[in-house]
Image (cartoon, rainbow, N blue to C red; front, side):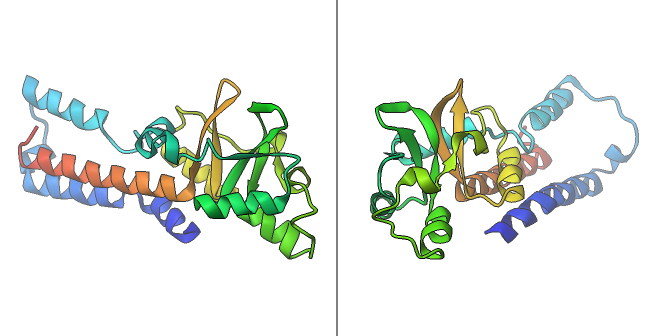
Length: 206
């Protein structure tokens, strides 16, 4: 998955460039100055407005739906790691938000499958006697994004820091969680839509 993400980040504009080259070849008049009509200028503006890198994290959360973004799945710092991992398994997620007992709206950290593997399994500790608060990534060390963060920026953060889940914070309150799979799907979808728009532009659909 990390390799795929790096490929998308490094080659994300290759397809767009290829299509634009096709557009230039198919339209020799574009190789020399021309006077654009009002319709042509508007069409170009529309292409620019809907260009790459426009999708925000808020769009990803909206597409997932409130019940699927993982923000409603949480545990407390006092819960056992065993119960936290059991909850992950039951709900088919790879991370849980951690809150302080009695403070559901205040995020204390995050616990992931990686925490369980590295800090419990590898070290031979007991998941039933170890508290979530002992192995979680604490709030002051969390890497987070906001609803307005662009998807490609979030992907870069996750790739650079080798993390698979990232909380979405708005005014200090957590409003959701996105995974590396979520952002990859969003980027692929955005590129597909861009190709469709460019093709429509070439064919005169704008």
